[in-house]
Length: 281
Ligand SMILES: [Mg+2]
Image (cartoon, rainbow, N blue to C red; front, side):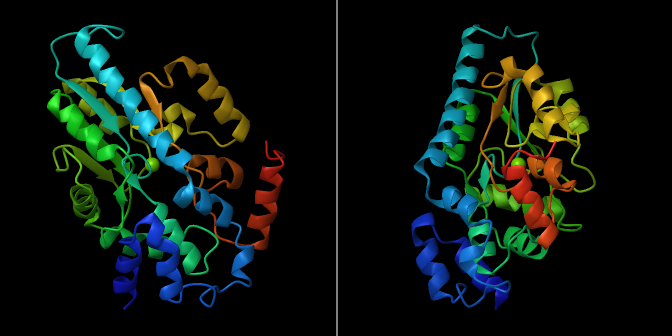
């Protein structure tokens, strides 16, 4: 029953999400931690599922990526370094696949923090939908002879790769096959996979919602360090580093809590309040 329900919720578009959750009895009765109106995730998720601005940030980022392809093919800007074919390396979650229905489902289940079990079920049920512009962009790249490679870190057990490729195919993305997709389980360090691609292709842009999607050197533990390191590369953003929005999770959370997926607790909430006041170094 649970998987079916999650599949149903995941299949709802943003406009049908609220009605769907209410119809499924997911809110308010399902909240297991007090008044659901007090859920500290609600503001972030509300923005995810309602803001036209979020959708246009995705469109904007894919427009930049498309312009980059066109410029390189015209011989402008980045000069081709040799005869290698061109490629773009993209993250998956919250870059080409949206997690907004997962977060809405999480809220509907009364959770206040990332939940691995719900996430894994949602992935296995092909819950992810393409982000705005992702399908068009990957197909455009294909039409111009630029291959898109997906490098992601997920762990749904031995079939992680199979689930991931199925998600890409279900979303209708180009290059949704094992030759172009790497779902690595053990580490969030993507550099080895990225370098293996770069040995055979000239990589003209990296797409991601997390600094770690661009360079591992950003994988540091403090808020201030992350900002300082990213600032050193500020000229690359919007050029070969193309950044997508994610206000619900990622290594920005790790910098606050020491872990990317902190469990809900009084300490978690207290530290979130500190972070909101910019009092976490
Ligand atoms: Mg991501």
